[in-house]
Image 1 (cartoon, rainbow, N blue to C red):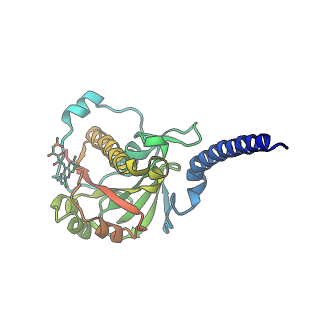
Image 2 (image 1 turned 90 degrees about the vertical axis):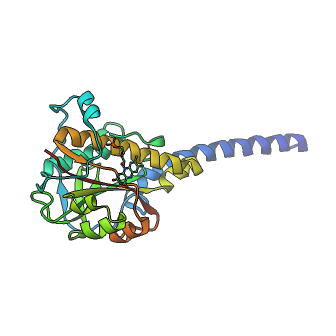
Image 3 (image 1 turned 90 degrees about the horizontal axis):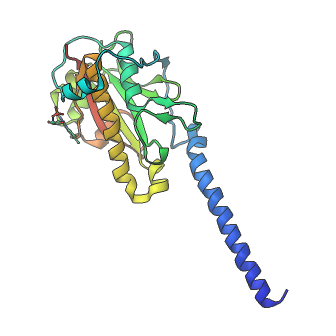
Amino acid sequence: MPSLGRRRFFKSSLFLAMLFGGIVAGILAFLGYRVDAGGDLMSKRVEGEKIKLPSPRLKGNVSLEEAIYHRRSRREYLEKPLRIEDISQLLWSAQGITEPKLWVGLRSAPSAGGLYPLELYVAVKEKGVDGLKAGVYHYDPYSHTITLKVEGDISKPLMASCVDQEWVGRAPINLIFTAIFERTSIKYGKRALQYVYQESGHAAQNVYLQAEVLGLGGTVIGAFIESEIQNLLSLPSNEIPVYVMPIGAIK
Ligand SMILES: Cc1cc2nc3c(=O)[nH]c(=O)nc-3n(C[C@H](O)[C@H](O)[C@H](O)COP(=O)(O)O)c2cc1C
C-alpha cells in the first residue's frame, strides 16, 4: 500500500474505531447503570424482611391546586401512628415508578439523564406505623417494597444529627433521602452536584404535596451532619444524605 494511502487508511480506521468505541462506551455507560443493579453503585447489602407495600392510589379527594395552596412546612404532629398505605403513598410520590413500560422505569420525580442518583429510606419510630416494627427501611421503587436495613428506633440520634431539631425526634417517621453522586457524574461531571440536589428538591416537593392530600404534614430538613446520618444508616462512603423529612399526622 502506498504510504499516503496507508496513512489515509489508518486515519479512517482510527476514526471508525473511535466512533464505534464511543458508541459502545456510551451504551455501556447507560446500560451499566442498569446492569449494575446488583452491584456496588445501585444496591446495598440489606438484610431483614422485604415488605411489599400496598399499590399506590392514583385518585384523591384533594385537588392539586388545594394541595399547593395548603402546603406548609409542619413541625407539630399528632401522636398517632401512620398507616402502611400512607408509607406506600409517600414513598411512591417521592421516587415511585410511574412509567414501567420503558426498560429504565421512569419515576414520579424527574432525574437528569434518567440516571436516578437518589436512594430513599424511611426511619420508623416505635409505634410510628401500624404493623411495622421500629427501624430504618430502604425503599425499592422497582418492586415497591421496603427492606429493613437498621433495627430499632433511631429517632433520638437522628434528631441529634439534625442539630437537635425536636420535630425530627417527635415525628412517627422520617424520610431520609440519600444520593450516589457517581450515577449522575458519570454523564454530567461536576454538574452532578447541582443536578442531584435539584432532584432531591423535586422529590421532596412531591412528598410535601402528597402528605397534604393524606392529612399529614412534614418539613424538609437541610441542617444535619452528614457523617452522623451515614453512620446511623451504615451507608457506604459514596452514599451521601441530602435531605431528612419528618412527617406525621396533623389533623
Ligand atoms: C433547602 C431547605 C432547607 C431547609 N432546612 C430546614 C431545616 O433544617 N429545619 C426546618 O425546620 N425547616 C427547614 N426548611 C423549611 C423552611 O424553613 C420552610 O420551607 C420555610 O420556613 C418556608 O415555610 P413553608 O415551607 O411553610 O412555606 C428548609 C427548607 C429548604 C428549602
